[in-house]
Length: 205
Image 1 (spheres, helix red, strand yellow):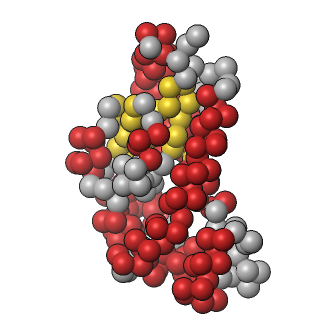
Image 2 (cartoon, rainbow, N blue to C red):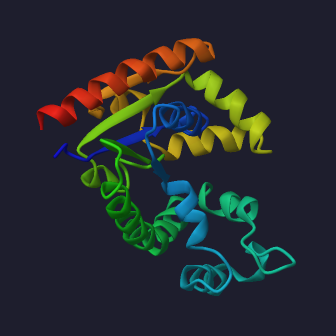
Image 3 (tube, rainbow, N blue to C red):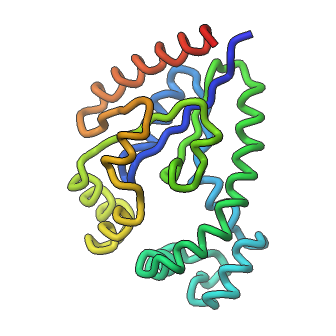
């Protein structure tokens, strides 16, 4: 039987991780996104949201009782102590759900699957992967994409980038790298090449 490899995919904010995931999906490869799971664990009724509200009060909630992500971002990216506290509340719950998702994907027909995570190395989620892939773009492009996409100013965009692993360390730790600063065709070529590589690794394993 072919080995079901888990490829951990990471990159700084606005590097295009979801775009890369969709490009792999065109080759029949499933994925789970840790960001999606992170949103699930703070839904109304979840214990993590109750803990967050107990610490910060209703100022981090919307009128309908959901998490106000912008308000929470302003707190945790201004104070590293608060960011570490939030991670201590959410990361274990995210990891537990990711384990269940990975188990289901290993049972699929795909030879490998993706674990998409912006904090793959920082959170220790790389331990769940057999191989790691970093999506790389220049910091200037990260800032321009973040400010236009996420309704944040340049200062907050820079704070988010500073809170993540440095670009140089991320690239040094990754097994594979995709340069996503070019056009869609260039990205598709890189994904196709890696798809062939990962399928070959599965056959060899």
